[in-house]
Image (cartoon, rainbow, N blue to C red):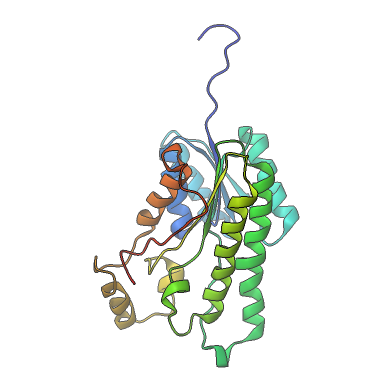
Amino acid sequence: MSAGTNPVQPRVAVVTGGSRGIGRETVTRLAADGYAVVVGYAGNRDRAEAAVEEVTAAGGSALAVRADVAEEQQVAALFEAATAEFGGVDVVVHTAGRMYLAPVAELDLAELDALHRTNVRGTFVVAREAARRLRRGGALVTFSTSVVGLAFPGYGAYSASKGAVEALTLVLARELRGRDVTVNAVAPGPTATDMFLDGKDEETVARLAAQPPLERLGTPADIAEVVAFLASPAGHWVNGQVVRANGGIV
């Protein structure tokens, strides 16, 4: 390298909910593609640090930062940390979310408020910061659910919150005209994460696994591959879309 030549800086990704499940798998996948990754987490520092250690052990760069996605100052600090450590932000993957299941007639409104605080307000807070900070050629990937279309009983509150995410995603893609930044949502079907499996018996899990023509549950790795494509230059012509990654459930 000649004197005065700067090395090529890596693309930088911020992944909320990066300490477990789909978020954790996304951290690993993006790091394998050469991204420096900021692992956003809500409470489990040990899991977040384990994700960082996995990336660095493989020769990558990562940083764990605690942030409640519904708190604007904490989210701003998350993005500031990415900029201070790695020079900017190119990709934001917002996997952080909360699930609450109950028939509408039996809704606990306190649980509903908590769900919407994380899933709706949290997505708006992260999306607002991403819209302000993403560099040209960048991407924002939000998370919905295929249940928005499948309308499973018991999922009314959760599905409604994710319907809001889809609406925001499509509007923001159009608001960022001229910025060379894409905005898409990934809507997984039943995926074998701790959040999905919690509270479900074996019969329920088996029934859900049998629904797709591919006859299995999705895995976090399946979803992370979709995210990696949307985040990459190869996926940059996909914009303002909801990608239903569910093995073909209709």
